[in-house]
Image (tube, rainbow, N blue to C red; front, side):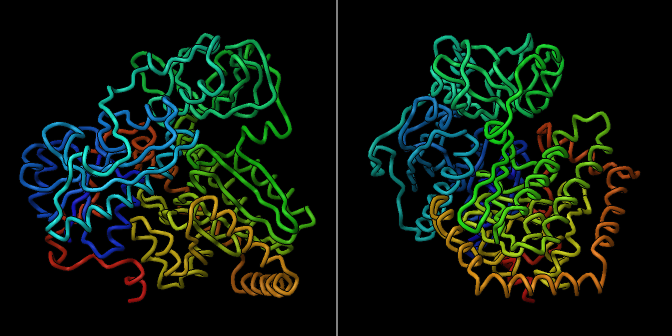
Length: 582
């Protein structure tokens, strides 16, 4: 079918749904819901058989939903209504929740139900739940609704008759008053629920060291204690605050300054304005420090597992350097395989654009950050005493994809989405040795097709074109079990030694053909122009990205309906694996 995705932005859910629908053979075009006139024009140009709205911040224009079936993907159980569905579910301690696909009508979130999918809740950040359980359930329910719509015989049901075990209710938008933490009386779980419910957006309003701030990126502390409400420790980027019965780490803050837009930055960086009070806090080292910094190492038999769970998958210069040191320590261990686990929500998304934007010289910090990424990639590429594995349980983009390609084996969970390109960030050329790594995977002919594609890839599509080695089914728990099994096979003596010897020979042969440093030099020559040259595209795109500037238009690579003068209207969009095969 011809489907229009009408969305506020091309977020994780929108990307996954786009890729799933395209892989299922549908012709999919995307329009950002900028205003009524733009959305109405998109419908007129694309003439969709079905409209799906996976992520909206306002109602679909009546002129559209009265003439076309519009399916709203709502992150709540049937009967739930309101813009803070997931926030309330976290705060109220719901044990199970769901996603409902309903038809747009006059009353918001109250239309008939086409499909819904439930899932068990876990105590986690809203952003994490959204990227895993909500996205998986949304894709399942949306594809079910599309199949029902294709029959032309299915009649959607009211929420009361859709077969749900329980029904939700209409809830108002959650206010900061609802999120307010009573540090003297709230226990740790209550504090975490309030912080988790606001993570991503809008955060929790509070006051720290005489500063008005919004709190993000919370983690529980298991040992430290103090007077409720007091800051009791610091570690790298995070600060620890005592609760009634324990403590929590807070990794990110946004300063609240009237009349000024602020960025989410490391807590210790924001609190530097009260440097003396901050430095008076005891600095925590050891396992607790590793936990708050996101870097963690474990060993199971002959295999070492290196986790780097950085906020939103972005890696600052300092984080790259700390991860490089952790990787070097892992190589010194008497193991055979080093497994790069990444983070729970994202494997890696490359450079930390927010830190770069906040720097005194964004160009200079960009240069430092990309060189730190390159140093890390080189260390992994040139490892000749271990086999390396990238275990990708979360999404990856830009430099994060090519960091994974530095490993010998790449395994990804089936729900993982790849964006192996840089151009969407102001036509960045990219580095991380991609000009060396990508041809090894897809051949010289496949490189331009991937780098110019600018659209998300599902893990199964990435496997189909050789970008990764295997796509693993199952949830996160099953993924971890499968990874452990696969890694054990690599570490077996009869497998490990031949693979390691073949790797050493390949690295030596590649070095004879062309020294590794020359790839980096050429990439950085282009990147220097991106950072310091006369074309400001990268700096403009970065600013819009980190400050979430509303879209003024939909990029042409997404809005196929605006390419109709160039493309045959009736031709289906080929899957990327077909393009590469051609």
